[in-house]
Image (tube, rainbow, N blue to C red; front, side):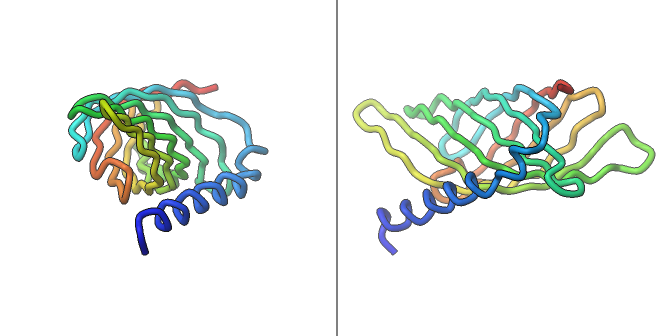
Length: 155
């Protein structure tokens, strides 16, 4: 499949997930938060924010986020449409989570702006006070690796 066809398929998948998230929209916003971290390929620092809607179904939340990355002679803006499955840790004030979702990534260099679709797989842990850390692995246009920390406020 050529690059143009791949982009079209990934963008259509993003659109379908976004449209199918109606049940998530019916849920209430339970948390809002901010995040920052580093990424590899491209090597960048990033900052962003997220909302947590859910649960959509038992322990599964819709957690869209926006991240702005700078460095490595490129500026990237990622719109991530991720779902997170929360796993309470018994007798601890921590909840682990795993998740995944499509992404729309806009990358700008000095003479070029490129838009592409990607996909993220994520793992994280969040303390009951709101502090969290997260690792993401990206496929296609998404950065290949991200490590971030952040804070979520109950809404």
